[in-house]
Length: 233
Image (cartoon, rainbow, N blue to C red; front, side):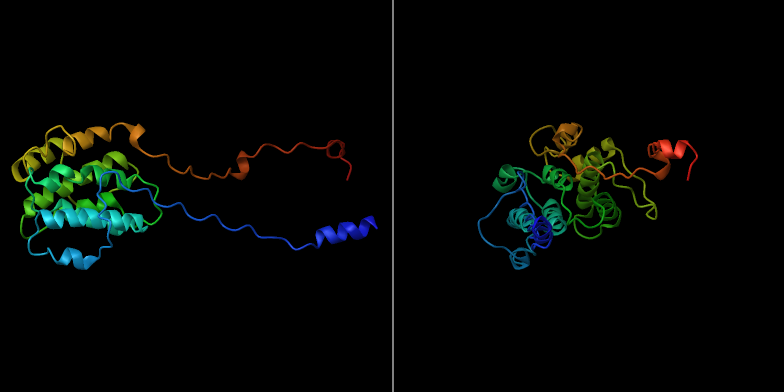
């Protein structure tokens, strides 16, 4: 009877636990939410203006893409806002300063959907940008690159891309010459303040620890039994 009960227990159907749903992305505290669904068409409507309307729309679209679990595309939308032609006293910029802090926040989040290397991404833009307002875009790309280097020192450079990496003071000079008023001053949303903030590692989120496996030679020696010590088979 006991054997039959044991067999019935072993033969019972097992229930596979349901996988835990992925955690919803946390909204970026430095980006606005517009409360409506956006698409690339909303950005195309302001393509010729490249002004504050496009700036704010890009920031809103970046937040939407981030919450949709598309961090790489969200970063590109924020990049587009960074390169817009805006005045420092416009209400959009006053409410949501240039997105240096947003870039630093986004690249430190544990998002598995990121593709590529943000450090190399900005390095390539800075060295290869052409066209209208090229110098402005170049130095803002270098400014974003410097922030990424601070918050993600684990990201390697591109060994195949030969470029002279500017110092922080050189970037500040470039932003002073080609950027907007106050961009290199200390204050909320300014590049210098964002760069200094990233020096505090307490602002970086905890990362998933790497799983390590001990090498065979690192294992503790197996205790030999008395039978083995006696030399008997």
